[in-house]
Image (tube, rainbow, N blue to C red; front, side):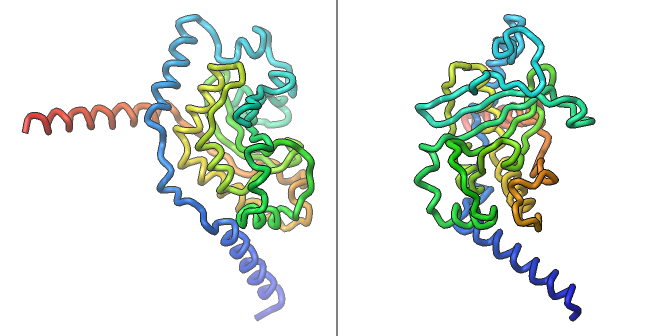
Length: 264
């Protein structure tokens, strides 16, 4: 076997080992299920906005057009009691040519949610993968949600740490914190949309975060969290309309089955 082939085989073995360590004890994606109450809650929010003739982000933006790169709200929307925060912003068209999103929300977990979990086996493995980064940032980036011009969620994605200026958590803990997330930041309708979107897409988010980790494993550079060539780690489009239609059909099927059972 040639030397180059040996090196390639060794890299494959190392990558497989890194992913195996991070996956130790990982919950099965099949055990992650969508919250049946998330769809009706999402519909209620947008229904109320439609009745008032308002945009989801109208209050957040103060009725003005968003300024590219500015944070909304300026100091982030923070739920200090539950340990989460988020902000909305948009990029310039030149920065992301071809993008159809109006902007996106970056969602974070604050230190009380993860500070004591950093010594777990999976978090130590993730830290090794990331090069044992040191940071005094009090947040960890969980997820970003892209929105279209109508204020509807259209995508989910993860980004490298240099983008947000903090660090990430291992996939187990990231998915756990998203699955249990409740928000009360003073922006109730946006909070509800964030929560509902996450809960409707939990199985997809588990795959998204796994793809994030794989992208990090495959990057050969020594300082991967600061590699400007590595910005978008994983992304998927979401069709909440389709999910809602499936949920409605499933509910009708269950109702019909119940009626048949009562008649028999």
